[in-house]
Image 1 (cartoon, rainbow, N blue to C red):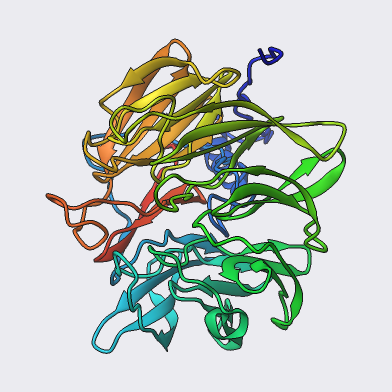
Image 2 (tube, one colour):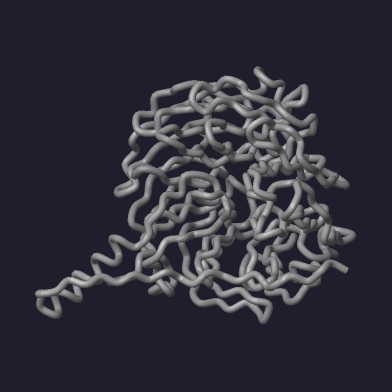
Length: 452
């Protein structure tokens, strides 16, 4: 049996106060409210799952509940098909989509305040045998004034984030013999120091490729594995930066500066490659899960660069599941537990140390095959965007699921999945007290700021 460890604690919300003497009381009150909202912590959302790629929303001054059944949209901008969620940096919103006849992918930049299209860049594509050929998968990564977009069949483009000028571009299939997986290249590029790291399944030994982020020149390549869809992350372990990559064969820890393999643990699918979610990390827990092959919890050893298996749970079929069989929505940690959405939309709580199921809820998402939701944590709460276009505020604990508020944010569309009314499968961005999300027709922005 694994050694028990303390429950995972959530962080309380920070609150600030300001004092302005010699003002009438009501003027002082108004100034206090306005100033606290302006100076409360506000952040960009410059890459997949936020500034630290950890799915934690750190802003303050956010609503406690919704005013009605629908969230008021501040602006809408027309968009074409795609799965990539928006990102936000330096007053701009970035997203990619697919336009047909002729078939081409686009990198688009919108004004954060009013949704005006600022610039777009396009490149011709041929999706060939890609299944669900509905558009780009990977979110745009923005760093130091550069926007990096990775397309479904391997086009990697670096643009000036302000002007859209193409600074450099690569065809990863041509340059690295990248093997496009069944559902297309999907892992968002990662910036680490002066490197841009991409998961593209190249050969030889180029499943993971590190480029100079300014010039696009090759710095290192690593791993002979076939590609999966999981975006890489960087963590701290034993006093060192470790690049965590989840490929079609294993979870691997690399030296991000050199690509040297530091540790690995096998994870080989029984049927098809469906390693999609980003590894979820909290303290010394590292969790991964797939629709077809269940879940694995590793322990990151704190004093040396090694991992050990805490538990592995896997059902016999996609309906007879054990633990969690997650399709695409990243799980979150709270209260010594891992919370996520199972294969047919069941929202579950597992004990992080054992994988034992503590409870299940069937109200969060659609109860259909590939029912899913994207989650971020915000202080003591979780914000859940489900596959029917609803945004939910909830408290999660081992005692149960407590829904605080739920409202419609955007309508489902059928391009991402032709099922009933369709789905909303793209991850939202949470930036500057707003939520931004897309479907196959539009990009929307809505304020989540608390009233003064």
